[in-house]
Image (cartoon, rainbow, N blue to C red; front, side, top):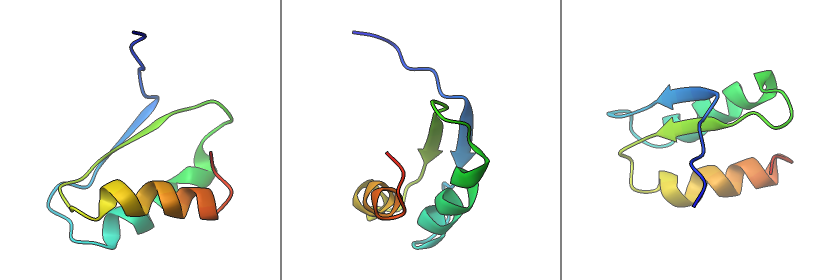
Length: 60
């Protein structure tokens, strides 16, 4: 198994939804192709919402 090391970390612990998803989408345009953004959140909906929102905005 390969360890993935993120280039950036967004700590959203304690922030209620939808703020983790909004902050993630705001951070995404500053990433270069291939860079990894790690998002840390304790909002239960984030596990589903953030990947879906990212895909809906053209990020993979």
